[in-house]
Length: 160
Image 1 (tube, rainbow, N blue to C red):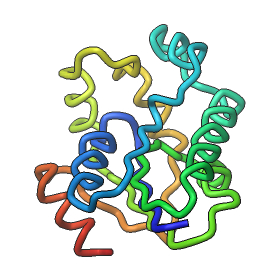
Image 2: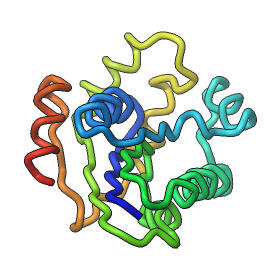
Image 3: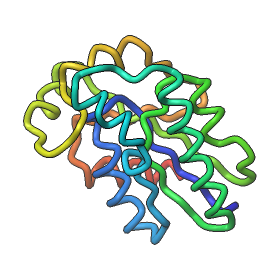
Image 4: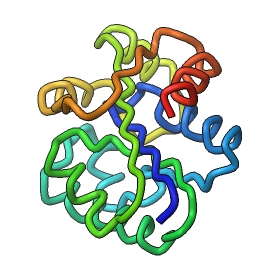
């Protein structure tokens, strides 16, 4: 496996936007975790029903399958990966350099972003459910999301 950069955090923290910019800058493949949600998961979130561990387990396994399919490629992944158990399943079987970055902001800032976002299945009514379960591991770099996406990308690149 090449390098794997994982951007994680609650919905609305900027994983997709930052991940796309970072992957373009580094010329890495980009894996958008949201694209791998099942129709059932999307339907639940559209109806303001938080995902269960079982819902997330299947989704995380699908992302892991995609990562393993991309072995020997450099990859940026955007995935909430809120719990340690999710993160371990996400990288199961991955050999190589894995870099973990948690995009972190205040509840108020992220809620404001979610409320202004259009055409996404995750609504701000579910934000509490993510803040309630997120675990911040010691091995990740915490990235403050109050800066612009370009500055965040530069900070991540400087950490690599």
